[in-house]
Image (cartoon, rainbow, N blue to C red; front, side, top):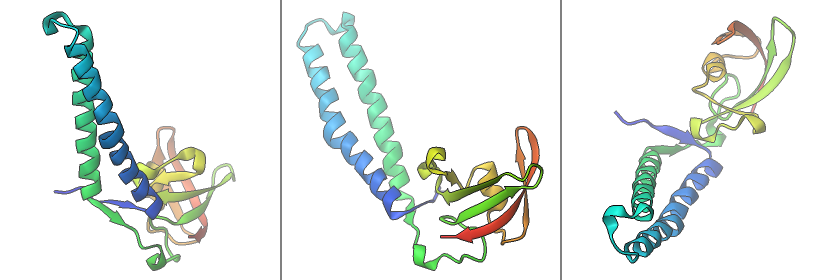
Length: 157
């Protein structure tokens, strides 16, 4: 089973740029560190060599993970998004029914989530709770503090 991830054009570009940086910039740096450590002599007692080899393994694992993400990435066509219900890339204005607090979030793929920019993952508790809801509906969201009810006030793109 593949884990399809949906991305905006910006998010997909960031993923590609990160993979490019790891392969073109970071990989040669680590290779040079290994070569430098190897030149220092006995590898059995060379901590620099061991550290560089470990860093190389971690880098290759990260590249592999990101390439897998890219292989399963799908670009979301923003022109096809229906604003009658909450979907990925929808900006939704919510009101906490308990305290009246209003907030606005854009639902994005997990890898693009950034709370400081008010972008939350569709896989987060709030994201899952509001997904598919229409304006005026109440979304019941289970959070660590208990059950919170949010009224959907507005859906935009």
